[in-house]
Length: 290
Ligand code: HEC
Ligand code: HEC
Image 1: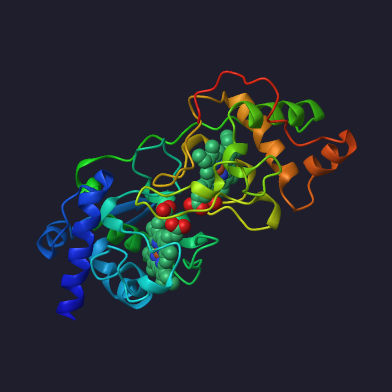
Image 2 (image 1 turned 45 degrees about the horizontal axis):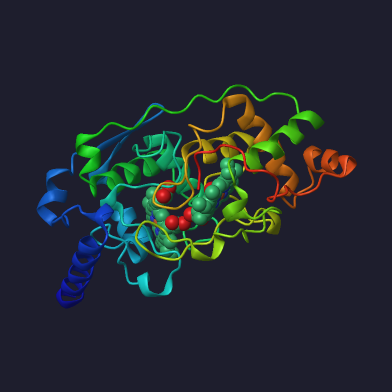
């Protein structure tokens, strides 16, 4: 037991040296103990880290590990790798890129699970159990002791879908170059797709819109809006909050629906229009994205 622990510590130390992002010192038991009073506040429920120890040990430790560093016994077999909670970096947030998620975001993620990963949806827990687990997840990272979560982005109410909006969304997809990674047809085969790595240097695939899998961070129209306006931190999927205006963001959501395999109003309209994939040889337009 101790030997495995030391090995994983050494391994983490190497990662820390190579990747500046992970330059947080490895946390010790004493650090965790100092943060055992961590709370979460979700609607009218208060979560307490110390009350989640049993559930964590029973349901989470096999992947996320005793120290929350993602080095549980399943680590070697799982791809993508279980998250290292010590880094305090989360994909699914309602908050701007680079900021901490809200407690509600973390609770939603636990309930939803992460599609295309071994992280299952957890719908066996009460709201109290989830709130306690959220506080426990937070207690592994020093970030939550010193930083507040970001302010959730504003999402204007959803407009009516129209053919013009879908065409406008196609222009946004072209201009900000979603296709570089996701491909012009959304099949995750853009020119950059094969070289993508997450912030820890691990290969990562872009999302394939066409094969019917669910986005990790939710599949409602609001969720899609939030995904590209906040980005999936720790991955090459950036935030486009600086490049896409709120109204254009809705157009883009509608266009994304035309790429997805599920039948939708948007898909039917695109078919009627005979909408073609974007032409990447068209004259380049100004854009801040790679
Ligand atoms: C079978 C393995 C497995 C188990 C068990 C598991 N997870 Fe995960 N978890 C993962 C993997 C893999 C990821 C990373 C997925 C990714 O990055 O796409 C993850 C990521 C997460 C994240 C980060 C989400 C984000 O937005 O970045 C949270 C929070 C989380 N897990 C909480 C939990 C909790 C709480 C439990 C126990 C109730 C648990 N997990 C059990 C595999 C697991
Ligand atoms: C530099 C490459 C890159 C660019 C550019 C890019 N993406 Fe992504 N995108 C990714 C990667 C990689 C993932 C997968 C992340 C993961 O699974 O953790 C992803 C995932 C997604 C997802 C699924 C998220 C989820 O919750 O599973 C959506 C939706 C998405 N991208 C939309 C877009 C849109 C819209 C644009 C343009 C505005 C865009 N992406 C631009 C790399 C990129």
